[in-house]
Length: 357
Image (cartoon, rainbow, N blue to C red; front, side):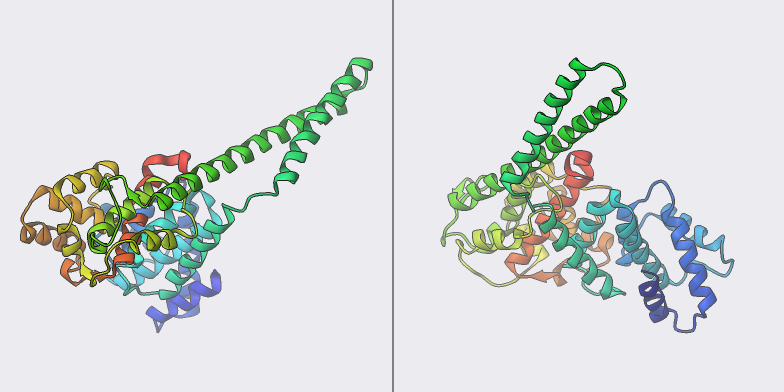
């Protein structure tokens, strides 16, 4: 991370001397030692999107305390520091793992022009690795044998204690350890059941070829563009373990392939294809955080609900997001995946510990 930071910082501040880079690095580490971090605000700074003014002020002041010449005028430097902060936290503080992964991924598809593309690449790799690791399940036999061994060990120790009540301190410690092991195995069992529950719901959804929210079978009479956002939301509904299954794009692709393919569309077109009722269903389930800048599709849907006139909500969105909604054009699979990620990010923040966030 130290080598990466030096390279990233040097790209933006070409004339930076080694002592300045070292100072920035030390300040970054000190900043990461804080008790709490606003991941969504750091993400907005990294993507150079409008962030909370008080957060920016505090961020700049923190670096200014170590270097009086530092100020917030160089937005590109701020973006590098914010992105590097997120990467450092990702590597050194597991508490923020899912929040960072989903916050970055929720903007990476739409906001592709980032100052340090390496960070996006590393996040995408980490996202895949974590998704795979969380679903690696121990061999059934090994897991069951582990539980049985713990039960037998506790039974044997209890019998020994009945026969000899003197000098049994070590024996008590062994019992405590066996109880701890049983607790660990119960946690593993709970996680396994969660995986099976999630996979069962997704499998039923795919095999059924049915959209609960659209209340219809998916077939060629329905355009992909009209189904894409709804399908993305429905897959997110079924995810119990963040940051979601590794094969999520494949699941979405499978469901979309049942519908009639059509051309790429802009964010404006995709939102306007949703019925008023569907817009409400989506945003009531996944309420935007703050102004919604970290979740652009949900933000656009929310703005569209407030005004049924496209020109009005488009203007509101463009002013908030600093990107023209009509210029954001993706294919149907990307739109489905985009809303899926945004919904998972909302789940992560609203669900808290129940989703490992």
